[in-house]
Structures are given as structure tokens and as C-alpha cells.
Amino acid sequence: MRILFASSEIHPLMKTGGLADVSASLPVALKRLRHDIRLLMPAYPQALARAGKLESMATVTLPGFPDDPVTLLSGMLPGTRVPLLLADAPRCFQRAGDPYRAMDGQDWQDNHLRFGLFARLIEHLSLERTPLGWRPEVVHCHDWQTGLAPVMLGMHETRPVTAFTIHNLAYQGLFPRHAFDALNLPPELWHYQGLEFHGQMSFIKGGIAYADHVTTVSPTYAREIRTQQLGNGLDGLLNHRAESLTGILNGVDYKEWDPGRDRHIAANYGPEDFSGKALCKTDLQDHFKLRGTSGVPLLGHVGRMVPQKGVDLLLRAAEPLLAAGEAQLVVVGTGSSALEQAARRLAERHPGRVGVHIGYDEGLAHRVEAGADIFVMPSRFEPCGLNQMYSLRYGTVPVVRRTGGLADTVVDADPAGLKAGDATGICFDAALPEALTDALTRALALYHQPDLWRRLVRTAMAQDFSWARSAEAYATLYRDLVAARVPPGKP
Ligand code: ADP
Ligand code: GLC
Image (tube, rainbow, N blue to C red):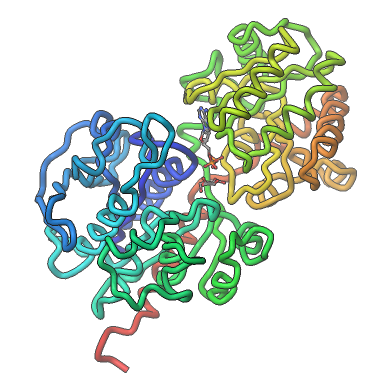
């Protein structure tokens, strides 16, 4: 099938979170299934710098954007054979800062125009007059940044089928009414069943309401977003679309995330020989100047420092264990300054026992996965989560809150799980520091029973979350959508 895969982030060109990992590794898996897939993303400066050789293909001027011609730059996603198109609209995308915010942390004021333009481009490349000489049968869009594309495509009789994937319903692309006016969209779309959301314009609602099919990144999250608790005000619409909403678990790119061949870590290792893992732990302790106390487990956490990830719960839950000298902790992340400060303060209170790196550091993320004994993800909600799956492969036992993809990927080491031999981590329920302290205490107790621990680690490492199965699920979905679409004029 011919698939146009449009995303605002693709690793290693631009990444602020897991969306980038998925937008890089799912297309490779689809390519392996022999689909003709092409990637489209905005030409951010980082992407231009990292993309390697690019050729200019065509320049298009899109309706509504006379002053922002878009040059299509064609190349390959680095390290793969997946064709890549970068949308070069310098005024919109060549800016310092991240894709959504200026250096001062404020959202760009014209995000609706920037991603409105991106959606128009997706539409343009999908129709008869496409300059590519290639027309997709399927357009697969991701998150709010692409939410308007299914809306625009829906207005054409002859068009490819559209799939829209929700990676995180908490980021909706909400804008004031004037944004809707500025985008020159048909006025009838300003409706509670259209793009209007409590008086604002919602990009993600466009994707959810108008795509032929909606997916999200784990089966449990697909159910959770249909509840008031995690529906972010869109549970009504998501229930309305229940027949066309499925959860497909993300996979892991084991080429990037495998302790047997990871280039970032101090020593490689596998399930048969853990000596390398011990070296990785020493390396991580040295890096953070932690006192090397043998027999004390090292807890690790990597993630965006936002309320979603529950790092505040971790900082509080770890305190008694750190004070008692029962554990050490390493935290890598960046985000809200309050959470960053709280992490720094914890490190000050427990010198030699806590290491904190505020910032984004891909290599360090790998070293934490390899060097920690226990990886902690106390997320308040988690559409899928990748780090717990990485942890499993690195034999770093995950302690997770039972939500979203965390619930779908970690089997609790309760008595039943231990007896059956399928336990891979520790799960807990309440989003409270005490509940996490209990879970960590359970993890530490297991850690001090070497036979049990070794079994837990081996079972964790044997889990296979490679993309093959999930890519098949997407391919089947695409095929079903194409088959179900009745060509215009036919009954
Ligand atoms: P989300 O997309 O919600 O941030 P995921 O678990 O799906 O969560 O993916 C997060 C990805 O971003 C992982 O690959 C993780 O290692 C990476 N990551 C997050 N914060 C950092 C950081 N500060 N430094 C390096 N990598 C990070
Ligand atoms: C989002 C989610 C995360 C998921 C990632 C990739 O950013 O927060 O849980 O793993 O997208 O789908």
C-alpha cells in the first residue's frame, strides 16, 4: 500500500517525546512489510541539519497561505531506507526553540497557522494535483499537529483513507476563535460536533471526528479515554466513535534499545551474563558521583518533567528510602521549573545518594536504562510509555502505575505472578506517594532475594515488544479501511 505518514516529530530529526520514536520505528517496520511508505514532517532547523542529503522536489503555494510557499525536500530518514519529505516553509518552521515554543518557553503565537499550513500540505500531497507523482492510498496522521488534515481531506470525494493516532489526548492544540477564522475553514465546522470545543478551536478534535479511523497507542488507554476521568472532555466524541477507535500497542526499536549492542553504555550485556550491567551501574554512579555502596539498589527515572509522569510522586516516595540508605536515585529530565527544582532539592538533601540531570540527553537516557536496577514510572496517565519497555529489555525492573500502556506491558510480581513465573515488574494503583513507597519497598524486598530477582530480570529481558506485530495490526487496519471505502459514484 502507498502510505503517507505525517508527523511533527521523527527521531533523530526532531524529538520532544515518544511520538518521535514511534514515527521513526513504525514506518521502518511497515517498510519491512513491503509497504510503500513516505514520511512527511516540517523542516525544523534540527531536521535540516540532521537529515543528510536532501533534494529540492517542488515548491507549492497552498490555498490560504500565499506568503508561505513550501519547498518539498526529499531524502531518506537517516539510517533507514524510508523516503522522507521535509516541508520547508522557512517563516513557519525555521525557528530557534522547540517545534511548539520559543526560547522563553511560550508557545509560538501562530501555531495554528504553522500546523494549519502543514495540514494543507498533507491534503495537497494526497489529491490528484500532487506534485509528487505519487498518490497515497492511506494518510496516517499523528497527534494534534496534524489534526486538521483529516478534516480537509474529508471534504474531497476522491481521496485516500485517513487514520489518526492519538499519542497523548492531553495535548489538544486549542486556540481562540480567531484562529478558526484565520484558517478560512468552512463556517459550518464551527460546531460542537466539528472543531469547536467549549468556545475554542480544537485541532485534535478534527482528527478524532473526521478521520476514517482513530487509533491510540495501547488497548488500555483506548478504553481509558472513553471515560470522564481521562477523556479530557472528548470522551463523549470518543464514545460516539467507539466502533472506529482501537488501541494498538507501540513497539520498541531494538536496534536502538538493546543492551547487547547499545553504543551509549559502558559495557554491553545480555541475559546470560550480567557482568556488563554491573559495569553500567558503576559508570552511572561515577557519573553522578554517587557513593558506591554494594548491595544498595539504584532507582532510575527518565522523562519529561510534567504532572503526567508523576515525578513528584517519585521524589516524595523515595525520600524515606534515601534517608534510610536503602536506595539511591538517578533522575534525568526537563520540563516544569517547579519539578526541576524539587528534584535538585532532593539531591541537595541526600548528597552522594541522588543524581539529577536537568536537560535532554539521549546518551544519558540509555545509561540510566542500563545502569539502574529499578526503573520507576509512576505516571498519572500513560498512553503507552516506551521507557518501561526499554527497561524490561535492559533487565532494569520497572515499577509502574497500573495505567494505559504501563498496565499493558508490565506483569506485577504479586504472589500469583511470581508463582506463574510471568512477573516482569511491580505495579501499583493509587497516584499517591505512599502507594509508590509501598511498591518500591516491595521491589527492594525482591531485590534482596537474589534468586527471585534473577528470575524476574530474566523474564523481563525475554519480553518481546518489537514492532513486527503492531506494524501488522496497522497494515491490516489500512487494508480494511481501503476495502471499506466505496469509490464515489458506486453504490
Ligand atoms: P512521552 O512521549 O510521553 O514523553 P514515552 O515514554 O513514550 O513518553 O517516550 C519518551 C521518550 O523520550 C523516551 O525515548 C525517553 O528516553 C525520552 N526522553 C524523555 N526525556 C528525556 C531526557 N530528558 N533526556 C533524554 N531522553 C528523554
Ligand atoms: C505520547 C505518550 C506516551 C507514548 C508516546 C508515543 O507522548 O505520552 O505514553 O508512548 O506518545 O506513542
